[in-house]
Amino acid sequence: MGAPAPNRAAVRKAIALGLFAALIWGGYLAYSRYGVTQGLEPPDFALLRYGVAGVVMLPWLLRRGFFTLAGVGWPRGLALTFFAGPLFMLLLSAGYLFAPLAHGTVIPPSMMTISTILLAGFLLGDWPTKSRMIGIGVIVTGLAFVAGGGLLTGKGELTWLGDLLFATAAPLWAVFTVLQRRWGHTPMQATAVMSVLSMLFLLPPFVLFAGFDRLLAIPLHDLILQIVIQGVFSGVLAVVAFAVAVSILGASRAAVFPALVPSAGILVGIPLTGEWPAPLQWIGIVLVTVGLIAAMGVRLRPSAAVRRG
Image: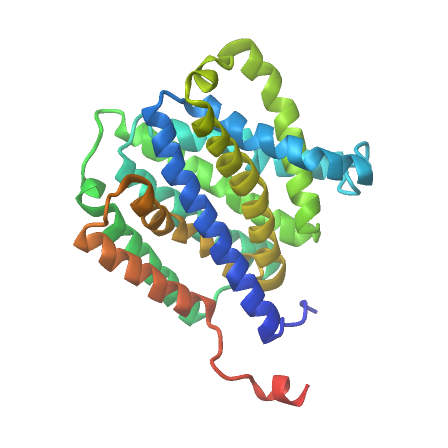
């Protein structure tokens, strides 16, 4: 027997948290582009995200038992870290070295959504409804408009390698999403374990091979902003919010939220860079929004069961 359907209040809460996570991750994209102009590289972004998140979540994990990973256990904790930890971030970041930004706007979010839906169907029996599939199709179409003409261009002979890295990174996050739902861990458990273990695995090689020179070279106020946005907001708050959405809506329905990130990044970037979306991008943002509404399938009026309850 499956889990009982959430009530309307819980669904509204989950959608709000999913949108909140997408907005934060959109800001992460905007500030990452800004950090690149200051000389930051993929290992720096990985440290900002997982190093800071690990420090923030370490006290919570210590209070609930580090040696048992707050009841998650080491096999599951290592699995969650493998799929959503530094490997995911480094593959995603490395894709931009070979493929243009437009490819990174479409391939990762589309693959995350589709991979999560397929895994949720096979492992959880949570197959999407027809209306949800239509909504997802509209979202993917909107992402193509958001990417614009750059979607049809390459960055060189190794563009295929960048696309392959994008396509490899995206399913990793999908597995994390489905495992969190299947194993029934709380959002705080999943976030804390993944963040702290990621920090422990990432910090030694970063110190040995990368160093802090690039981070220390940027202005202090920019470094503080990167720490807050990349680590606290993107690494902790957004992951917890998304995990709550998964626990309420299920992995298949919550899978649409990562697809909103490119549109959110464009909107967040308006006050940051002063760049306004092109007309095709506005169309894409509208299509993504319409697709979200269709994919969520939220009833405008309560069902008879809800009214009787």
